[in-house]
Length: 304
Image 1 (cartoon, helix red, strand yellow):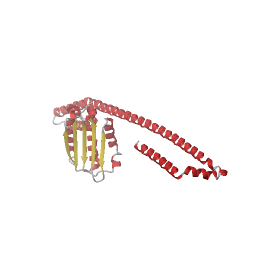
Image 2 (cartoon, rainbow, N blue to C red; image 1 turned 30 degrees about the horizontal axis):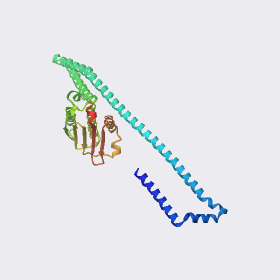
Image 3 (cartoon, rainbow, N blue to C red; image 1 turned 90 degrees about the vertical axis):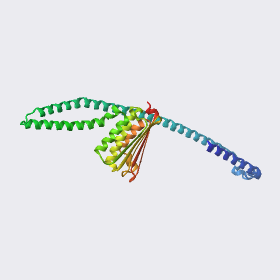
Image 4 (cartoon, rainbow, N blue to C red; image 1 turned 180 degrees about the horizontal axis):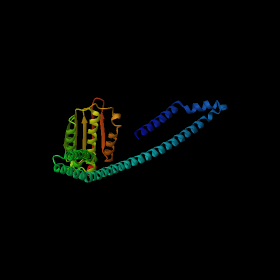
């Protein structure tokens, strides 16, 4: 708007200067005398032709302005449609993640109720056979011990699968305890890198979608650190307030090119989770400078 006003003032100024110069130099009279002496060339009709040209240029500019306005309206409409589509995609992504977590929860419950109980019964029977067998029945005792060992192995694998499908601590103890349990499990399985967890605020009142998003992002972030970062120290910080929740996961590993870091499926999954909840996520990394993931989830989502 300011540029348009400035341009209009420039045009008015130039017209005023041209009028003053014409009046001072009697350009109209001189042009008439010059054109009158060249009647054979119809030079006296030149002002009319120039006036027609001026009107034609003004009409052409007006038409082009109309075209530009129509294009701008079309672009604005397309932009609005794109915004609506992105909002619909975010809602669809949130619904998809909710459905996925519900299926994981149901599958984890079914595995726990069916396989877990039957494996426990098999182990009890094998222990009973082992304890009841005579000392001389080595074959029976050896078979019972083998069954017990196999059941122990399957139970360990089942617990790990259940933990990946649906963290039991998250449902039973809340986000704070679930994160502590997750970090403790990583420390026991992977002594390096060193993990530090810092929690501030009330994490357990943020709502189930936020709880699951934070847990999965930390889980995926630690997996990436273990697979790629070769880090010595990892810091996880979670700060919850009425305004929302902020998560930071930083390591001192080898880092990566930003476009490579953000192209992986793990990053895509993190971004989809955060954007589905209306939050923001940022990855700051460079070769040799580690990686820092910042996540912000707004309060209105947390309170929902």
